[in-house]
Each structure stands twice: as structure tokens, then as C-alpha cells.
Length: 416
Image: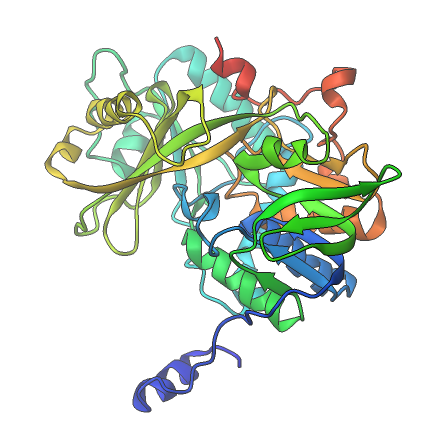
């Protein structure tokens, strides 16, 4: 079944009785060629690209809850490619290009909206830093426009430009940045992977990883043992827990990152706005709610809910940047479990266990990386060599010192 405007119209006239389930819910087989632990965006993207790009079909994605119950449904939906360091910049640039064709590729509306992202700066030093970042983005082939205060005012007239503590000196506009509907991304990848024969097993929690002679042979699950030749751990903030099942200790800390949404409002925020000094970012959803977030809770946790001090900090930053937001009522909040690496950059690599792979350490960049993350992990698993845009995301870089310290936003930064 292919989705189209004509099909939507036809089904509406027939009472919407002709739709079939978006993906199949099969019983587990005794064995698969490949098992992906984690049914979030990265895991589903990996399974889809293994099937689509490499012709592999005997694949299972194991999700302990329902699709969209993890970080893929617990984020602020931002899509961007404004990284600076070699190793990260080409990866996120590649991911953004995949985003731009994702809806046609998956035949699914993920509501990707390139409304533009504006990073604000508040000092001469910050301006210089964003000039360097903008030049790096342009050299990478992406877009960046430096705005003076009046340029920011034309785009964002509702900000507090006279704030004494954080006067707005200007901003860096990334026109191709924007947002997407987070759970629709999971549904779109699940539907496309299922159409290619991938088994998506919901409510199937992995309780153990089987290893014989230094090689992975399968997993133990709440629905029974399943054998496999290759296994990938793609479980975000649960990476340390799942890796421990294989006797591995990953350089990962798990922290909660909260997000909030207000009641539906008339259109008032056209862009994604990032207020770095307050570690605050905001956009407006298609339903009218203001979606915003801030910094992580500064304690390690596996609880998918945040603390009140962190919520208070986010609200303070919101009021500092745009006092008008004080008139909006917050409807709900949620917390995602962030897998924070020491250098703020991800890991896509083999592990010391033969046939066992890991994809983790996404820090604040997990959602925007979904298309390229799956593409690159699928490439590694199918060809046994890293994709060129993810070649520096090695697990052993923390032993060799070849770090990718992107903005100092990893767990080492959070401890200071």
C-alpha cells in the first residue's frame, strides 16, 4: 500500500476502512542473521538501510516497549547540520541531506520542516566563535548566514533585546535547519523496514547476550532465546546496561534531558531558536504548542523523568529570552535518557566481541543523526568497514586520545 494524497481522499470517502497496519507484528523466529537491540530511530534506520541498501532481509529489531516509547519520542525534534569539527561536520551534513529526501524515500510524512535555525550570541567572543562555525559550515557545503542585531530583530522581534545580562549581539542563521515529527520518524522507518521483510518485535526485552568463544551467538529475551550471527546494541541511554550483558564497560554516562510543550497557540515562532547562554532552545509545532528544552539534569539517572530544579532552570531561561512565553501554559513534559560520551561525540563501531556492534554516545545530537546513523551502522555491519563520514566514531579513541571534543558537551563537561 503506497500512501498518497489521492489514497487519503479515497479512504476518506469510504470511511477509512481500507487502511492496513503500517507494520507487521510477527512472532519471533528461532534465529536471524542480524538482531538490532533497540527499536528507536537509530535501530529502525539501521534495519531499514541493511534491507534497502545491502539486500539483507533476515533481520529482527527488538524493542522492550512499544515503538516510539524511548528517546525517539522524547526529544525536541530539532534537525540541523551546524557542527564544526572534522569528523562530525561531514556526518551531520550527510544526515541533513538524507533528511531532505526522507519523506519520498520512506513514502511517509515525517513533517520535516526546514524553517531555519538561529543560534544567538551575546558577546564579541561568541560572535567570533560563530563566525568560525559559519565558515566551517559553508566550507562543508552547508548554509550559514551571520545576522547583526537588527537582522535578528527582523526574524525574532519578540526577544528581549535589552536584557542587561545577555544582550543580543546577533545570531547565526542556518536556513536548512528545522524540525520533524519525532514519533512519525519511528513509524515511517518501521513501516518501510517491515515492507522489506524486517521483523519488528515490540514488547521483547533483551535480558542477556549469548557469547561463545569470544563471538556473539544470540540473545536472551522476554519472549525466549533468539540466535543471531550479528547483534547491534542501539539503545541510547541504556547502552551501558545492555553492554554489561556482554561483559563490556562503555565510556558512557546516562543523564536525563527534559522537554516541555505548551498549549496550542496561533503561529508566533517561525524558526528554531537556540539561546546558548541559557542552554535553551524552542520551536513551535504544527499543532501550535511551543516545544522547548534546556540542559540535562546534572546527575546520572535511568529514570525517564526529570527533576524540578532542572525544570525551573529551563523556565527561567525561557523568561529571560522571551518574556512573552510567561503567558503560555505548559501542558506536559517528558524526559529522555541521554547517552553522554566523554568528548560529546558518538560511537559507531565494532566491539571486542566478534559480531557485536555498538551505536551510542549521541549526547544532544541523537534525533538529527537518525538517517545517517542507520546508514553508517548498516554499512559497517554489512561490509565490515566504517563508512567514510563515520570513520572517526571509533570506540578506541578514548584509549588512543583521538577525541572529537565538539563544544565540550560530553560527560566530562557535565562534571565541571
